[in-house]
Image (cartoon, rainbow, N blue to C red):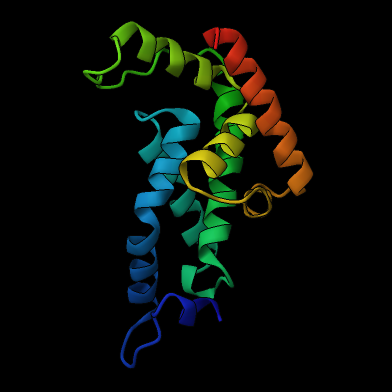
Length: 163
């Protein structure tokens, strides 16, 4: 099921090749998710740490749903990262012409100040297009919990951003 879903079952393809194909298929969205949780400077490192840890224990091709597993692992690692680095430096973004730089900084600081679970739910639902049920599967909680995280995140962002 899991391996065939990713189109990795081909004659002569070794396990390492299958893992590489799965990683190459998922890496873009995984690094974006990791970056949304810990910032663009640390996102790729967080993904590397997760992939390294996973591959020391099992092959991606052995997982029933590598995508779900890796999203969960990234979420868990982001929680640990946040605990280790409670006080983060501001994250820099390239300013968009349509929005003044100070507004981008303010919005980014507001999003990055959200608790990891709220930020994760916000990213999965609003940026990745997941339903609350799909986001709940990634986050290891109930859909109602995801909806609550979204409500709390919106309230906090409205308060901080004076929307």
